[in-house]
Length: 402
Image 1 (cartoon, rainbow, N blue to C red):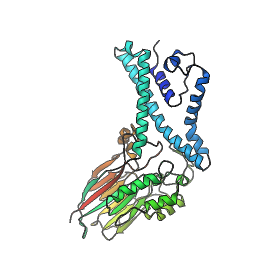
Image 2 (cartoon, helix red, strand yellow):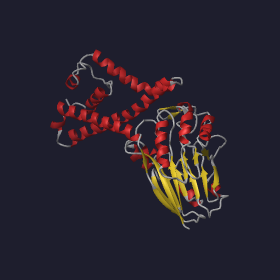
Image 3 (spheres, rainbow, N blue to C red):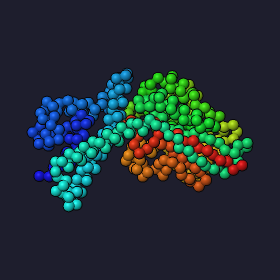
Image 4 (tube, rainbow, N blue to C red):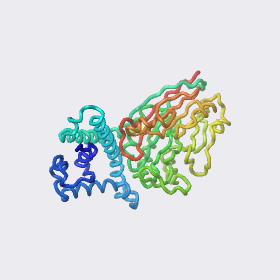
């Protein structure tokens, strides 16, 4: 009888990640052939207990009161979500390959052997290990992705300007002072004229921010000629999150007042569906989030309303968390639209699927005379990993037509 490769791959994952509870019994020959240690129910007890703990860690953390134990459980759950994604991918892909080789291609006599099942399962474990470990390491390396654009408007006594775009810090359980110190160092290396943060500064829960006074002090170290400006994103509200799903849907979506105070202490100017003329040279407008505009705003302004009172002979820069309404912004006279939100998918295969969801999922796009730049962000949401994407800051050199 043909053995299921899915079944064998699960056994391989179980041996490494504390066991996956399967329908096999200790009498099953596959257990003895694969892992002689798992000969009795007694030997399965610890792996099953550990697996159950990992699987429930996200839910356990959700119901725990604030404290260090909850923080630890949140971190365990976030790591496990990433590992679980690749366990499931490995199982699905390996079983599809088994079906291909055993039922479509004439290799059945090779791929139904115990040795081949053992090899395939161990290969799956190796791939899962490499992807998970690399994802954790890669998420903590902040890259610099530069852009250059030309705006066909003249600015008095200024031929060019450098803006550093960052987004999606997600300060909370995954991201803290260590990552912010690295980000500030990268930003200060650019000698920026202006620094902008395109939303999702926080990760929904203010209580998740560890040592906020120290964090604010680190962010105060950002150096730029015209200062640091920010808009809020869809996660800059006080809202419980469980494995990416939000709750309290009937409550109004607003930022915690502590979030607003934190930005003031960090010398970050929040533009909440409002704009400012900087040094009499260019406009900067920070939009409210498209779906969760926040305190005091029922519906955010349209692109035409944003530029209605502006002198369109001056450059107009818009800061918007989500890369939406690109054509409308271009038609309204916006010169540069700076966004985040997408994380560029964060983890493979998300980095491939995200391109189907957004006109510009990450990188550069020109719409008429408007330049749109979307960054993959600095931080993380959910799984504490990045695979196939990078954390980044984006220095943007703007050349003016003087």
